[in-house]
Structure formats: C-alpha cells, structure tokens
View 1 (cartoon, rainbow, N blue to C red):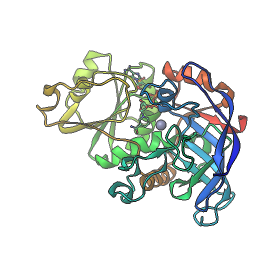
View 2: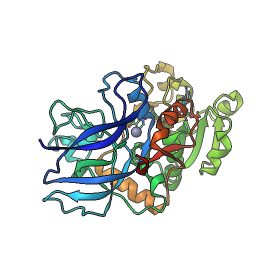
View 3: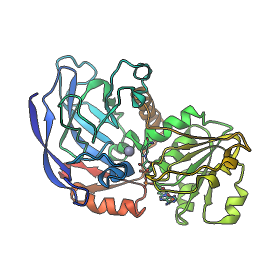
Length: 350
Ligand code: NAP
Ligand code: ZN
C-alpha cells in the first residue's frame, strides 16, 4: 500500500521521553478522509499505554485519541465530508462492521476486535500498528469520523472524544436523569466532564474526591455536593445515598467503600482502568442487591449523539492548552494528578 511520511511525536521505548519522529500514513482510499490535526487531548489512557501499564504496548508509540481537525482531502466515495470541514476521531478507527455489536454501533465490543486510533494492529497496513493524534495529519474511513460541531472553544472540546463519551455512555445506559442521584468518583479529565454531563441530563450530582482543593471546584463545575473521601464523617453521611456511581479512578482503590454509598439496587460503574485487580467483598453487593459493573468508551453513533448533546448544552472541558514540546512534562504532571482538568495539545506547535 502506498504511504505518505508524516511528522509525529512519540517514543520508541518505555523509558524514553516522547520526541519528534516520522510515521507512515496510508495513501487515501476511496472511503477515507484525511485531516490536519488541530488539537489533541491527553487522556490518562495515553499515559497507561506509554508506561506499558497493561502490557502489549507496540513501539514506537504515538499517543493521542481525542483528535480534532480540519479535512484536507476526501476519497472518491466520501459524501459525508468535504475539504475544509471540521472533523474528529476518538478511540475507534475500524471494526468488522458485520457482527451483532457493530451492527448496533457498539463497535467497541466488535467480536473480531476493534481497531483503536493508536497502538492497535493496523487493518490496512499489515505488520504495522496505528499511530495516534500527536501527528500532523490523520487518515481514517469516513464512518469512524465524527462531525465536529463548531464549538467556540474548539480546543477545549477535544477531550469529549474520549473522556466525554466514556462518561456519557454509562450515564445514558444506567439512565441518569431527573430524580436520580449520581456519584462521580475522581475529578480528573473524565470526572469533571461527568459532573457537567450528568447535571445537563438532570441528575443530582455528588462528587467523591481525595483532593481537598477540588471540593470547591466540584461545586463550581456544577456538582450539587462534594464529599472528601478522606473525611470519615462526610463518608458516613453519604452512605446508601446514590443510584449510580461512575468510578473514574486510574489507580488501585477500595471499591467496597464506594459500593457502600449506593442505595439498594444501585450500580457502581467502573470506567477507570487501574492496572491492578480490584477486590469486591461479597457483603459489599449482596446486602443491597448492588451491581459492580463497567463500561468502555461508546460506539460511533453514541459519540456523535454526545458531541451534539454537549454542543447544545455548552459543555467543554476545562483545558490547559500546551505545545507538543511540553508533552513530557504534561505526562509527569498528569501522573501526579496536577492537571485541572485536561491537557490539550495545540498541534500547530508540531
Ligand atoms: P485523570 O485525569 O488522571 O483523573 C483520575 C482521577 O482519579 C484523579 O484526578 C483523582 O481524582 C483520582 N485518583 C487518582 N489516583 C487515585 C488513587 N490512588 N485513589 C483514589 N483516587 C485517585 O485520568 P482520566 O484521564 O480522567 O482517566 C481516568 C481513568 O479512566 C484512567 O485509568 C483511564 O485510563 C481510564 N479511561 C477509561 C476509559 C474507558 O473506556 N473505560 C476511557 C478513558 C479513560 P481526585 O483528585 O478527585 O481524587
Ligand atoms: Zn482516553
């Protein structure tokens, strides 16, 4: 397959900083879109992958899966986009299209295995793998490219492509809305968007945070209540109060404590990806017929629905916009929890 050399930013080994490098993008196929990357968010999953937290990272790795750009070229069969349009790609760039889940636009559960926008075996270029949004351009089949609404703060909207859909999808599935109490565990990239989205859906939102300084921030972000999880008295008062808890914590933590915050029949939905196994005690779930469950991003149709919902409700991330040259420092700060609340790379700096 013909390829084009494109400038990118990535790393060749687990212990090496990210640096400028060249990657190959496939030449435009009839159904493909090429776009110039304008902005790319930094998700904790990028950090997990460059640290090889889950094993299986493929080198060299070019992270970035909250990708917003402007279309430069379209293939001969593309009707959905034209040059000059805004476009966006999140986590999913290919799937079999034939299985039950793909047919329902739950591509993330494709039985053949979904292709992610970075660090997945490349279905077009055999033996190669996908490279993410820390690059000048991105090439993707049109059906996986989202129509990006014209957000005024376009850079701050980039995190919707992963953080946004990852919390929107379970909030919809577990029916957050008026009369429902929704707990958000961890205020990072995912958590702060979960507050805004759950509020826009009409739910009563309580935040559980380990960070004292985020208690007042949570209210400013729209939360109705904030609980400092290190404060025993506050935790005791919140027991049995929530219908749904969205758990966005990126590291090992005691989920039993938070299962205790659920009402009878409540669900704790794990979206965070701590590399170590979490332990659930029988008595944390049997007493109140509680569910410990999980959710993984969201399909293409739902991602478009989420973008349109966020545009309508004026929801974007609180973003710190950085240059690509500062990305290594940003990963160090993300690891320390020192980001309020999402880094977004202005890709014109590459
Ligand atoms: P983030 O910005 O780093 O936020 C994570 C938050 O978790 C922190 O801000 C902190 O909130 C809390 N936290 C961190 N370490 C903790 C600990 N040891 N104990 C208790 N709380 C802790 O990360 P993110 O980008 O939002 O991503 C969160 C997780 O979701 C990551 O594991 C990421 O890989 C995963 N993820 C999953 C999906 C999916 O589809 N399932 C998609 C995207 C991301 P407080 O300061 O408020 O306590
Ligand atoms: Zn992500």
